[in-house]
Image: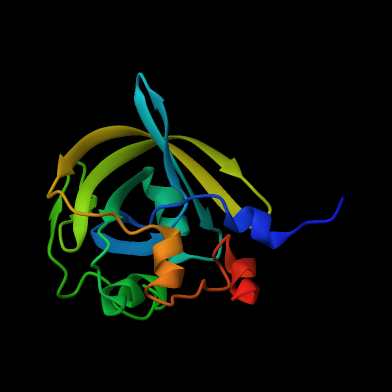
Length: 174
């Protein structure tokens, strides 16, 4: 393999999202920067999550996930609840405003511009992560507001990537 300059990878653009699911009545979710629309007929999205995360395990079993698109003004305390704590230890949805999609996945309304629910149609196993491709079943727009990008998360909010994030290596660039 040739030389890898991590700064080159940091030039890719990302949004910031909460990817969630429901498994047998238990809700869980996590911060993610890897979500993208991949087709329009049918509308499909993809997300890639670390295998060690509870959300990944739950999506693999439930076959569903939801995505909340975060707004720029979201406070770090809200990001921290979903990004730096484990659903194995806390109820991440305690005191969070959300509704349920018809399929039961949580659609987070608080600090979100939009949310959608997807049914997993394909899973690709990577060495450390699982790539979930899902067909969108439901979506809702909550408001118009500037979106939180991964770059803003680092530059404005001074956030770091946890060890399980695909972008953990970028922490060394700061």
